[in-house]
Length: 105
Image (cartoon, rainbow, N blue to C red):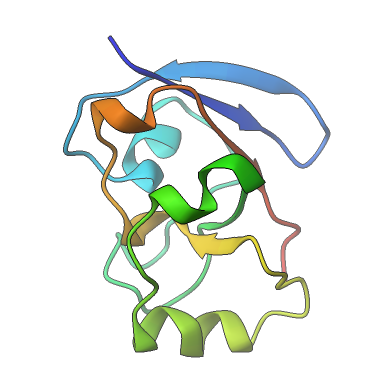
């Protein structure tokens, strides 16, 4: 099964097996990472699933939507690797993806 590597806000890394087709947010949330609140349930309205994507995978993800961009604009922790984990689905091609949970706003 493909794996996602998640680094918490405390710097601890864990691997998570994921079902292809699930969102990164769902895989992280289902693995009981307390740092991902996912308050909106994954409908791109809260930004509580903000992550940083490993630079090697940034180009492999789908292009950011205008809504996602707008929500990230409100974060004081946004950078060039910022994404909302609810806004892209995991695929076998993303096996080994590494993400870091962004600081809370």
